[in-house]
Amino acid sequence: MALKSRNIQTIMESIAYMILALPHNLGGYGLGGSVFNHEIKLNNEVRLRLGQNRCFADLYYKQAKLAVEYESFAYHNSPWDQGKDMMRSAILERQGINVMHLSTIQLYNKDACKDFAYNLAVRLGKRMQIRAKRFHEMHALLRELLPNRETL
Image (tube, rainbow, N blue to C red; front, side):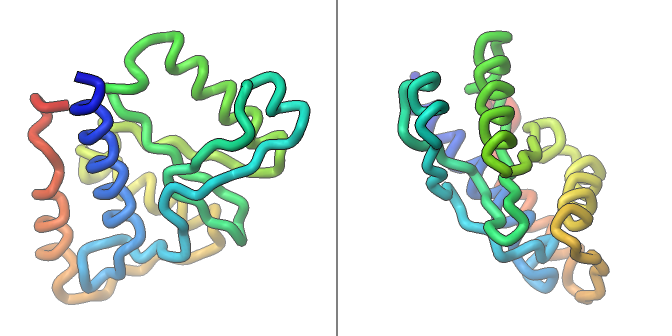
């Protein structure tokens, strides 16, 4: 079961990456420049506290020092898991990295996802103006890649 959940998690992170980063003519919001599953080395104090030398950001915009973390139901459904994520975010922020959290609900809700993308664009210092003629058609195709909600 854990392997299945991890596979779904990876699929969801990949789709979130495509929706946010692909250019408008391919149905994405055009917020490229991020690295997928970027390794972040932790400082000594944090290493001891967390018992790990590094962590990975789902999406990382190096110039903006901004991480986007996808929060799935499968991995973040208990108060303990949510608390660990908040601790991890606080640690990253102490190291000068801002963190935005994209939830499953936001990803599946087209308007909420668009709001997230606009907020991300603001933090990146970008202005999002979608002018591609095929954006809506291609965006709908991208959204069809999202797994059926019952499999999450």
